[in-house]
Image 1 (cartoon, rainbow, N blue to C red):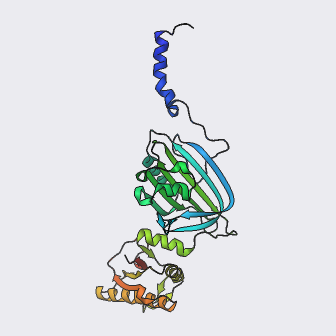
Image 2: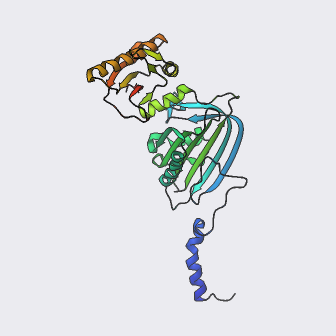
Image 3: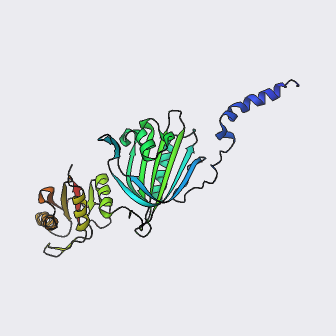
Length: 311
């Protein structure tokens, strides 16, 4: 064998670190038969290392932190769905962090108008071993608790219910995985998606308040339309430890004292209506704040009634 020249040796030495880091020189290829789901665009330069699609299965969508209770690992809240589930595991280039990948997906979720149902990060998510082995059944998703992110969101409409869950973990070997599940609900199956009460509970727990619609009053502040209360009844019946405030807001022409009293009257009317529907009055406190909170997330905030969580 001929001796290598100095130039060839120098070239090989220059290439050596790149060969050791193939993501920099050669593009990684996706696992055979895999494809991105249109619900989310993949992170830059990532590749698919595992892909599965299950048809017409029961699936647990986790909507709370994982905890051990009574010798079992259970989420604080979850719903069981039935439908088609696409499962994709991406490997994230090590030039980035798990936080970079999470923010990338979060920006997409917000830009596409998906509704977040539950989010957590780090130790607030619970033990990573629970997520890897009890929730996803993929042991390679285990890593230090401080390095994890989880998000569940609703994608579709009542006519086309779809949900996603996203789990990102940086493992002890510094490899970063982003695991995506997309659930397309089959309403004819064993589950029918997330109920109105479950949606309301998630919003109440996340935001601390929930606007009641449709709830309207006449000029004498008598309750006229209360269709929005049925979901509240279901929520309180399904969660007997939940206590709430009924807060009425009223920002229309009138004296301050009058608006304060009228808003209280409206809150009391809603409280009485809930009592008439079987809810214990001791679980509900009525409050009227008149014009003192003129802004809210919705556009029309002058007259509204909100359910507020008692901490």
